Each structure stands twice: as C-alpha cells, then as structure tokens.
Length: 294
Image 1 (cartoon, rainbow, N blue to C red):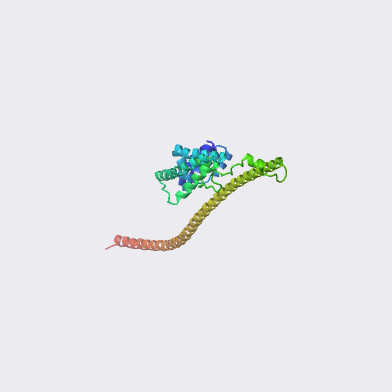
Image 2 (image 1 turned 120 degrees about the horizontal axis):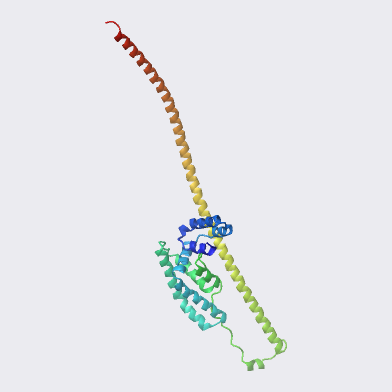
C-alpha cells in the first residue's frame, strides 16, 4: 500500500467511515514498518459532506466532470491569448455545464444515502467554478480528495478591450515630445515591461492569497471539528463522572447492606446453635425417660 492508494480509498468512503478507516490504515502502515507513510495517512483530514459528494462525483462521473475541466482549460487558454470569441463561447458553455454537474453531485450523494441540504448548491457551484478558472483547483477536483469546498476570489477570465493602434500617418505627423521617436518608443517599451511585471506580481500575490485563504479555511474547519470533538469528550466525561458518583452511592449502599447481613447472619448462627443445644438436651431427657422403669 502506498499513499495514493490509501488516500483514494479513504476519500471514496462515506464521511462517517473515514476516521476509523484512516486510523486503521495508519496503524497498518506503522505495523509494516513505514512510519513516514503512517504519519502522512494519519494527517489526512476528514472531508465535509459537500467535499465528499464532489469527490464521489469525480470518481463515479469522471467523463461528465472531464467535460467541465476541459472547458476550464480552453477558457484559461483563451484568456491568455485574449481571444474574445473563444472566451465568449466558453462562457456560454460554462453555465449549463456547471448546473448539470451540481445536479449530478446531488444525485450521487442521495444515491449513497446522504442527501444534501438545499444550501449545499452554492458550495458545489463555487467549487466547480474554481475548477474552471483555476488550474490548481481543477487538479484537486479531478483527484477527488477534497476536504473542504473550494472557492475562487481572483479575476474571472474575460476579454480585455485594448485601444486600437494609432494610424501610422498620425504617428508620423504627431509632434515630438520628450525627445526623439526612439526615446519615446524606449519609454513605451519600458512602461509596458513594468506593467507586465506588475501584472505578474499581482497574479502571484493573488495565487498566494488564495492558498493562504484555503489554509486558513482548512484550519478554521479543523478547529471547529476539534471543538466539537472536545465538546463530545467533555460531555462523555461528565456523563461517566455522574455514573461513577451514582455507582459509588450504590457501592456504599451495598457495603452497608453487606455489613448488616453479616451481622444478622452472626446473630442467626448464635441463635441456631443455642436452639440446637436445647434440642439436644430435650432429646437426651426424652431418651432417658423412655429407658427408665414405668
């Protein structure tokens, strides 16, 4: 067993089976002498119901999901090429594809015995939209190992309207400003380079922000789960403490009863012994009377 095999097996299970199965696989890996694998498996987080439903759809309806992911690839390619026609076409395909997949996710969850609440549609749609726009999100959805729904907060691909180039005749007739033509072109090239650098920096900053937000959301969800676990354990300890107090009361009552029973048993033994002595004496007197003269 390797990590990918273990992860695929776990994220294909219904949520309530995840934790016990994960711990069992981690124990199995540790028993096999692979402590590093055991640690990686143990670190896997239980998926929310919505994330599980999307994971299940990725497995059971991979062809349907593949059409959406392929659309996302074409959309991103069109965005990079600034192909307005291709962007418009992909945009027209996107809405019905996402809507169909949202229904598919619901159907898969219901078929597995976990019908989703109406509010889940928004989280499913946001996850699928993120997979369309963001390449990393697309890979996460394709793998089917989500622990939480995804969302995308960056720019949505759309065509950029650029100003039409100035006619050559007008450029030639334009008066020189700030130096000769070569200097102006150099400054324009420098300006364009700087804008491109800033655009790249913005894109990288937004990607880092998305990753940070995902990490924050994961840990927030982990904290919520830990708080719920703490509440469950606290309630269990309180219940056990209450049971222990009642058990101690019952033990005290049983000890008192045992003490009384032993005391009464001792009295009864003494009374029985005295009664047997009297009976023996009466029997001896009767025997003596019967053996004597009339």
